Length: 317
Ligand SMILES: [Zn+2]
Image (cartoon, rainbow, N blue to C red; front, side, top):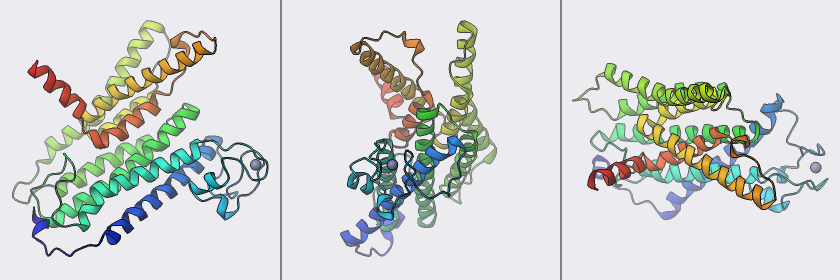
């Protein structure tokens, strides 16, 4: 590893903890902005004005009522003025984005500061120059942070409004394409340049094939039941997952998303039965996009390993 050959400057634990803490704070702040987005955007409200306020009594929040995560704990989940309950989604989203940004920093950001690291992930190509390793790591850290933020936003909007806005999925597809272009360019040794035309075909296939799966299921569902099953938003979300993750991890996140949706349906049916309600399963509306987005975030770390384990198990049995 070339970075190992560089003059190793001993970094104290504090010097490593500071950027990790900073990543967590950035994550909390981005999670907080995501909360503004998911509460105001669906109602076509201005994102900046008026200042943050209680959604029940319109009381304008003091600065200390507006600190991500901490304020929810200080206020014990209720508005100071009218004591209305604050949704658990606020701190959950802030904590989730904070956690994801920290994990991404530890995996892809910290190796930039620590010469002689081991391979940070299975998709790390180790045989290129130190300079482009840093470009690859920085692109991966910033890119995955943006990707996961978009996915948390889509998960929240689909959960609450059954809405996967084109304004997030379509730029998401283009950004995923640029992300892989930059990463693969950084990972290409000068001696063996990439042949870009096959690369382009591969990327287009990774975008179109996962979307096509949703469209085919949608068509089949319509032919059988004459009703809309999966939405077009789900197809665009799958195209976005393909653009960022590649074809096999995107398909794995589709399978994982379906399993998560089915598990959620079973939980809802069980809760319904316990309360004496008896609704047919097909009548329960479930936000598939939420579960696809969650599966997409998991896929950043699983890298299609579930499919690989399964194939290996099939080959050896
Ligand atoms: Zn209030």
